[in-house]
Length: 109
Image 1 (cartoon, rainbow, N blue to C red):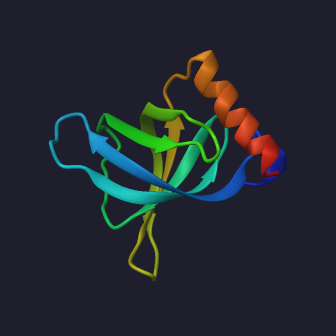
Image 2 (image 1 turned 180 degrees about the vertical axis):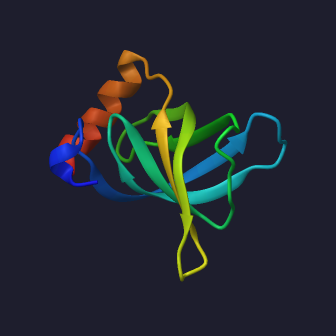
């Protein structure tokens, strides 16, 4: 999707993320390839299903805030590098979470 069609500005990043399905004890790790107020693209070694309840946890660089956000899988693809690229939409953000993400995006635009 082109930037002109996006509702929120998206920036490339390389933030470490922890992912956990609501019905699993196991944690998965990856990195956030891009981030916006609407969602994220996370690169992992693991696949996820569209109907899984997933929590993504990450820290905003330069801020003392760790976010633990419920997300929904919008798309998932495995590329020739054998990595999974997952597009997640934030299910809900409170004002503090939204402000932290928006400030990070603006600082890194």
